[in-house]
Image 1 (cartoon, rainbow, N blue to C red):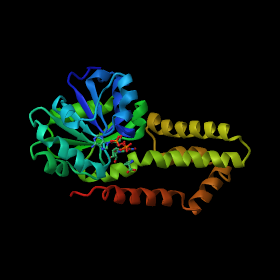
Image 2: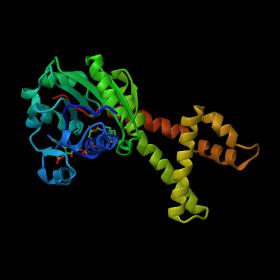
Image 3: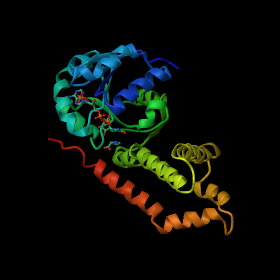
Image 4: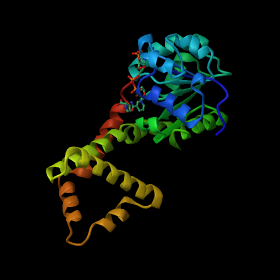
Length: 272
Ligand SMILES: NC(=O)C1=CN([C@@H]2O[C@H](COP(=O)(O)OP(=O)(O)OC[C@H]3O[C@@H](n4cnc5c(N)ncnc54)[C@H](OP(=O)(O)O)[C@@H]3O)[C@@H](O)[C@H]2O)C=CC1
Ligand SMILES: O=C(O)[C@@H]1CCC=N1
């Protein structure tokens, strides 16, 4: 692993900002001391300072010292943040990474400078354990900067480069998607309790079963239906349960939920 030589500023130290920071340190991409983390309130930064991160409530000062700047605030908090840092942006030095849902690269440039290089990245919370599915898109960043951003996120999971117009779709499928799969696991464990297991053992069984299903696809490079066909014995219990789920809208409800999340992801940000 080639350690990043510059400084990373992560503006907004919530769920994603902190998970990214910890993931980058764990993977060896950067030392904690190379990463600056900001929030509006200093109280929320104490723990992070104890872990060796540079912490601050002064976004402009942190950006002035950084090479890579990650925007990790909520879409509705972004305009206020961009107004604070516009004056210190250096187009020669900085590359901006925005993880904010529904905010385009052009939206960000319109606030901090038309020549600023911006890459959008959409990770998910599995970034905390180096297992994120991160989609990356840009409309103006240099190949060198895109490669560095890709390298950064590859240290905390898998990366797929996509066109920017698919970014809200990526948000729904991958970033929201982790919640959808978690709910499916929870529901399976509740089914397990109804048929005789204690809650803790039912959850453990559901989790490992879900992990096995995902790993089958990842390691065998096969299609879900190919693997399902191996489980469904003729006249058997699997096809009976699976068809009952489909009669109740299992696939349909997932598809509808993903479509609604994608619409919502595109409507989270107000330009003014
Ligand atoms: N959660 C997820 O799974 C994913 C989220 N995203 C996107 O990532 C972004 C962050 O989401 P998430 O981490 O969940 O949100 P959080 O609410 O957990 O984190 C936002 C953080 O930003 C801080 N903040 C707000 N305003 C400022 C400011 N002006 N300067 C510095 N810090 C500020 C807040 O702290 P304080 O109030 O103390 O200032 C808070 O810690 C969003 O845009 C979201 O769409 C993308 C992919 C997945
Ligand atoms: O729910 C949200 O709006 C954020 C963006 C993707 C995941 N969490």
